[in-house]
Amino acid sequence: MAAAVASDVTQPPNSTVYVKNLEESIKIPDLKEALTEIFSEYGTVIDLVAKKNLKAKGQAFVVFEDVEAAERAIKEVQGFELFEKPMLLDYAKSRSDATVQREGNEEDFELHKRRRLAEKERKQAHQAAEDAKKLKRPAPATIPDAAASRPAKASRGAGLKTSNPGAGAVVPEEYLPPNKILFVQNLPEDYDVDGLTQIFGRFEGFREVRLVPGRKGIAFVEYDAEAGAISAKESTSGMGLGAESKPIKVVYQRQ
Image (cartoon, rainbow, N blue to C red; front, side, top):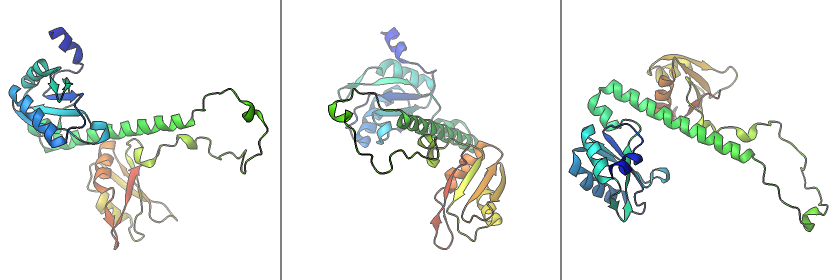
């Protein structure tokens, strides 16, 4: 039995247990209560994360006070049925927020959050690029039937081609991968370099704000590294500026 359990574990030991194959119809408060009751038998649980969004359904993260408790839980609970479904356990791929907060200082926690956010945005950008590729794939060939082989009247606009051959593969701005330059849009017309520097200059590694001559409402903000740009984007996107508190849009510059 130990060999079978070991074969299910792919990540190196740490204090956070990843649980999957959970019953998706159970309400989150009920699920968390049941998981807490089960895993508390093996050590002190300092955090338990379970979300209801589509990608996170059927999964949870149980954060223990120490690695030994996580090891005991995986050994004993692997395959245990909860709501008539066997739970599948592994160690989490990265340290949890609760663990970093407990073991490190505020600076460590901020760096951890930035890295986690950057990884999330990289995955979103990769997924968006993959989806764009699928849209460009030609439809599978089919054998024409009699009706299809008859000449048809050309539809209006037939034969027209886009002037941008790569348009189908353009990644939406919201899913662009992180880089050290931000593209800021929807700015009030009266905001100048000094005003934007007050907003974006408080983040690590700030370098400069660049306005675009002849174009109002947009600007580029550059940092020394991605970490500063990630923090700035996370903190300022949607911020209301001007007399009307119009929300600004902050994305990574398209490379």
